[in-house]
Image 1 (cartoon, rainbow, N blue to C red):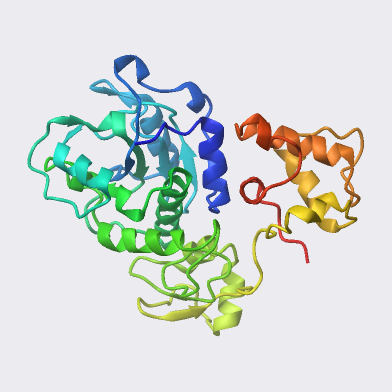
Image 2 (cartoon, rainbow, N blue to C red):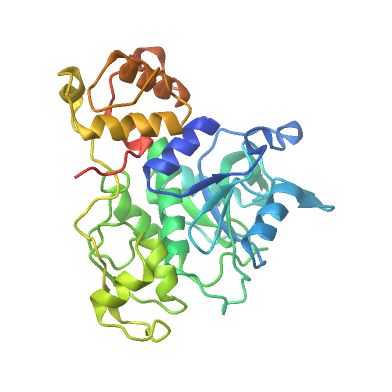
Length: 348
């Protein structure tokens, strides 16, 4: 069991895992807490929306409908891999499910087949809705599957859970069929692989990973060159040039693609605790300062610049406080987790 993450902590965990996050206006105070408890939490449930279109799906999940008020989940995972946060607290996503399934999630053991609907899942699970018609034919692009993996890993990592804490709605109750179109067992394997590494890292195979350092990618049914480019933070033109592709509409499932820039990390790795205490002069300090400004954590009167200064330390202290860290961890000196959450762009 765990206390639910604060809004800031959830955003930080998602970003540290490389998730592209959009915060829907009002999501931080949007919940159904007046209808029942929120927490302790034990896992993540993955759903599909039975809708198409990002904007309309996000609005539906935020507002709900007459029979079921919103929020209908905590985040909506779009086909391009972007995660739109729509709720913070209890959400109407899981409903009643099997208490024996919850017990298995708590133990992180094999899931039984759900037969009873005797336990409130809205109290105990985070919920993420994925934009998909749920008809078995609507494709699951590489970027969307990569985002499901990253979101699940982010929440598990934040709570110290294993991949066994991630389940599908159909594994929670025998009244649902979602998500349909991919295997939850396969997804748990992907999440488990990601949890073996550091945040934002991949497993190095490129088979299932959406990180910039994956190297190669095997095309899946429903993939397009555009969706693959989005997943790996590159362009269609770059993929075509590297792989000798002349027609962007002619790729096939099972085809292996080389990924440009595979050896270049997207975000700067943590330089170590002593780096900043030695008052460095480095482009990395400038890059960090710009990210702090973008996050609303600026204590700069001018700059930021390459020379580490008291303004840099005070700005980073603001970031630590924004993450909700305990006072003893808000001293302005960057730690690895705090640095990873800031997502400072890689500087050559």
